[in-house]
Length: 85
Image (spheres, helix red, strand yellow):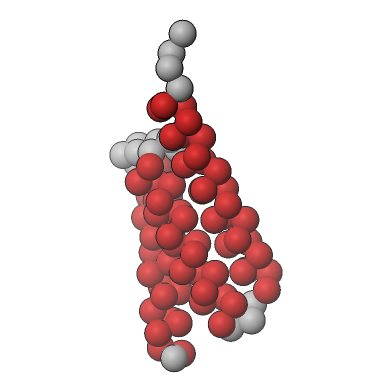
């Protein structure tokens, strides 16, 4: 089980770092669904990892990170579906 949790943690970290790299290299922007999904899935994987290891501060940070990403996607979707006046 420990190996599976470590793999999840590494994948989650890699996803968040990949999102940051894409933003830093101007390949995507903050309104990109790809960027937000990398953060959401990456933080979800890290939540599983940090809860398993009982690292509460890191788990809390990733819960916040997850909700920031979800909020961003909801706002992006609303903006795309709202008719322009």
